[in-house]
Amino acid sequence: MSWLVRCWVEPQEAEQGEPVVRCCLRNLRTGEEEYVGDPRRLGDLVLRHLREEGAVARNGEGRAADRLA
Image 1 (cartoon, rainbow, N blue to C red):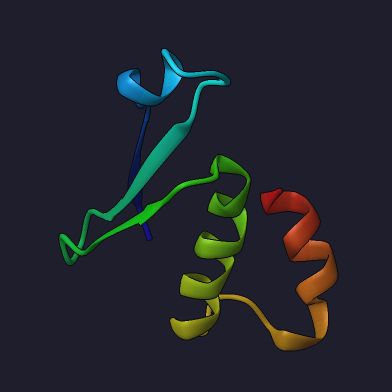
Image 2 (tube, rainbow, N blue to C red; image 1 turned 30 degrees about the vertical axis):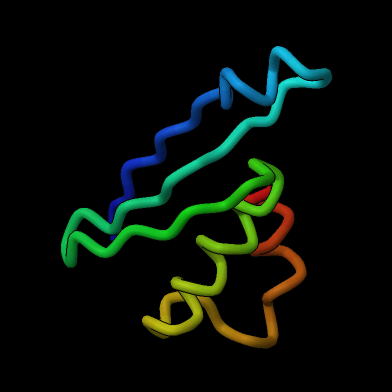
């Protein structure tokens, strides 16, 4: 599985205070895109997709999450 991750700072929100970083995760096989407003959520998003594809065993999810975080 391969993804393209794009992250950017929202300029209008950066001018008003602390910068806000947005991210887009695109599945390169399907073209599906998902957006997150907190880049720290990217690991959770990837892990969810890996589980859906059966690539991560449920009994090892703690160690897999550590590797993806």
